[in-house]
Length: 194
Image (cartoon, rainbow, N blue to C red; front, side):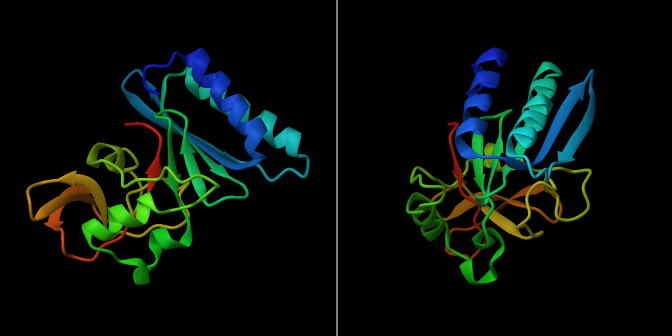
């Protein structure tokens, strides 16, 4: 997805918006000559077409401004799509459910078996992908506010450190860390990219 031209990405975003329904929230991180600027909007219009047109306008503007992350929250499904990276993130209550703490192997299995949004190609994100949703200038947790289900704990990535440890992100600080693969930690699945 990263190699697509802006025009292709805009077309893809338009098709996705038309096929998936109205969007409720939009947030974009734009690099304006070395200065990061975040723009966001929430649209709760009764007219679904007005909502789509409004948010698509924000996406097109953000793409024209070289946005690094353009987060869109689906109005009906617990997912967040980043049109800057082409990744779709799980944001269901399981993402912040302390009863869903899993070992690394169980986390990989959970994601590969996840049937969210009528798709089944979910996976555990790489360390680089997981670090991509860190937003250091936010209060704790250090993750984009577009995500509703979040906490400051450690979340697994699919990136191993060695045979017994794997990388993840501690969203309290936004820093990457290594934990034993047998430990029980949070999971946020992703699809697309790689």
